[in-house]
Length: 189
Image 1 (cartoon, rainbow, N blue to C red):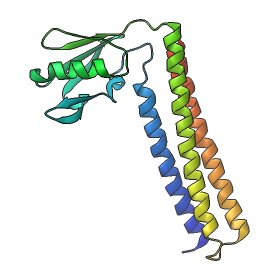
Image 2: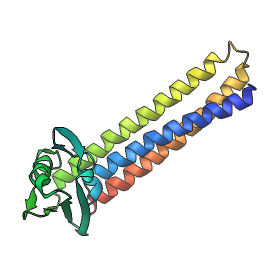
Image 3: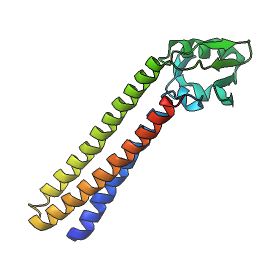
C-alpha cells in the first residue's frame, strides 16, 4: 500500500474513533442536569425489570411538557413502581411523583452550590474526553512509528504525526466548546 494512502486511511480511522469519543461525551453532557428538563437526563437510569437492568426509555414514554417537568408514562403499568424506585436510586437528586398511571418529575430550581457541583461534573467529563482523544492520538502515532521499519521515511512520519496533532487539537477544541456551552446553560439563572 502506498504511504500516502496508508496515512490517509489511518488518519480517517483516528478521526472516526475521536468522533465516537465525542459522541459519548455529548451523551454524558446531555445526562447532566441543566436548568431545563430533558429526557436525556434519564439516559443513565436503568430499571430492574424482570431480573434484567433495562434502560428507562425502553420501559416508558418520556416527554417534557413544561420547562422544568418530565413526564414518564410506563408502557406497562406494572413497572411504574420499579421505574419510580430506579429514579429515586439514581444520582440525579430528584423525587418522582406518581399518580398510579404516570410519573411526574418537577425539577426544583438549582442552588448555586448544586450548579457548581454540576459544573465540576462537566469539567470531569471534559477531562475524560480529552484523555480519550489523546489516547487515540498516541495509538495513531504508534502506528506511524511502526511504519519506519516498513520503509516509511522520517519526513513522512513527522508529517503524519503533525496531521494527527492538528486533528487532536481540533477535536479537543470541539469538546471544550461543548463543555463551555453546557456550563453556560447550567449557570444561567
